[in-house]
Image (cartoon, rainbow, N blue to C red; front, side):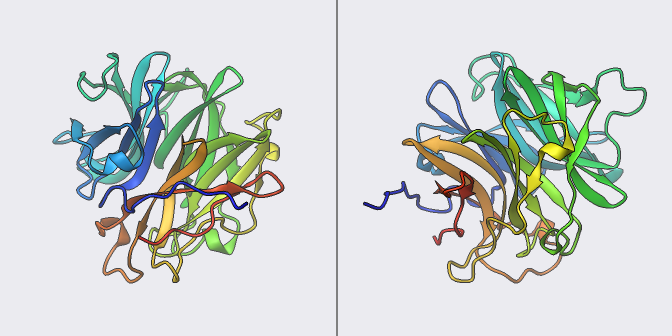
Amino acid sequence: MEKQYVTYVNPIAEQRADPWVYLHTDGYYYFTASVPEYDRIIVRRAASVQGLTAAEERVVWRRRESGPMSQHIWAPEIHCIDGKWYIYFAAGERDDIWKIRPYVLECAGDKPMEDEWVEKGMMQKRNAASEAFTDFSLDMTTFEHRGERYAIWAEKRNNISNLYIDKMVNPWTIEGAEAMISTPEHPWEQIGFWVNEGAAVLKRNGKVFVAFSASATDHHYCVGLLTADENSDLRNPASWSKSPSPLFASSEETGQYGPGHNSFTVEDGQDIIVYHARPYKEIEGNPLYDPNRHARAQAFGWNADGTPHFGVPAGS
């Protein structure tokens, strides 16, 4: 009998790009994402993924008027680490809008929808002699593996956006011994811009998987996959292999374009990919400022070799 997957009415949130869904131990799903104005950080909470659609949305932080954290508030992620809540996000400066850096908010209370969020500042490197992150650094994610916490982020060097990994000292500091685990090497990663970004970690079947997004943020945007054995040294680039082609890409058949910058969660015992996509292919102007990247969700299965099978972006 063919397995029946949970289905969703999509989109689960309109005009919410780079969606992140975190299932907490309280049984609630916490959602955050980029808003089209790139000026604030929002959080929703619901007892189900579908329930996020109608859930109340709280603004937990707004951009500063000038200086750091005053422009391009991008791609927030919400996590609970050692009993405290953290939101990782990227931001630029009003006078230098492409000087993008990763920043952290902290909520020490146990009610992130109600309690105060405070700025922890820019992510730091332990004993860093210079500015912690250079050039264009964004999309920081974090995950725990075998008692240690790691960070993965995208950083542009020599005009190429690569993925880097490092261990974390605390929720706002990395060790400073990062390693590059992915660079755009295939044609599908180099359309418009040479880009690897938007990492999301999935651990199954004795493997550590990192889904990432590639190419420009128009209909060429797609999701690739890195794989490492769970027993390997995750900071060793040789531990990682990359899918030769994207695992999730635009679909003319379903009318969904540029799927990417995803997160993973679980519902009813099934693995769920949450991602954004547009319901049209052609875009006027810079796709970064097109507002209609909608948050979507769908269940996915697994291939015989133990790798995830995302299929195609589901229709509405």
